[in-house]
Image (cartoon, rainbow, N blue to C red; front, side):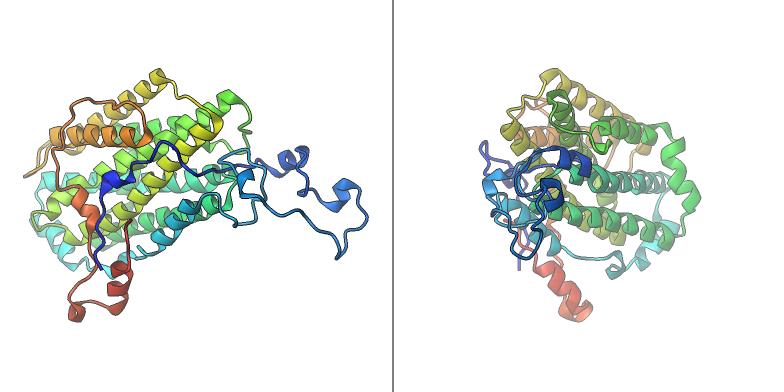
Length: 387
């Protein structure tokens, strides 16, 4: 079965039949008068026996944040698209152990030039930390603010996938015999790598703070901007564009196993980005929020500056078919795409698609020669359907 992804199909229509709600902590829940959600003891009701009942859930009570429905009841859906994301994500199930890295070991030890090894290692150094940051961001902060279970269920899968991606990088590092202490510490000691992580931590501060009620408009705007950065920049640009140096090696027949691992990760990240953008669009609509154009401009400029410094470091010596100029121009092109999907102004007018092959990387087809692969591999990849 063909699994072709058309990236601009992820553009989100202006009006969305979606909604997500976010409860705060337990004490905040008890402080809000929600008929049907309080315990019998809190209502002063002694008849807490078998004859007690609660009113049925109305899907229209659900919201992105600050909703009024029971967070423990999945259906009726207000956001059936979120459930579809969850089902589709499970069709891309894989593990790094399925992909042979034998040729990569030979390439890494005998074929890569010093410049190519520098690129490959530092891409890994950035990714190892970034996916843990993403996992914690979704699992410890964003999920608690979502108040529709269909949204949380997809995000639970997303948390698993970020952990799987971290396992994948660790598997590559172990297989290739790279010094773990050295590679994992590069984000701390290399300013250009640290700069991206530090910017992400600062930008996501409004999301990562647990238990902040989103009833205040300023706090809600801060949350929306932070989640927008996470979906559109951190996952939608930095991850999406960040794999391209390794794909450039793959196109020349080098590090093909590692590149195939990244192709599976990229497919996950496409869904993460699309889901996050759709949530942001719906949040802005439901809460009647307008993003500050100056705040958005600062966001894009900071992201571009961090990416340019990073590209200048990892590609301080160009490799065959790839250089820092191509990397940052493609970042600008992808940033414009994310802005269109969000329904906001493109930040980098006229940016060109200088890596037209990049989108093809997410269209990896798992269907291999039946006699050269396991049946489980054929089924898991071949069952993926992109709508």
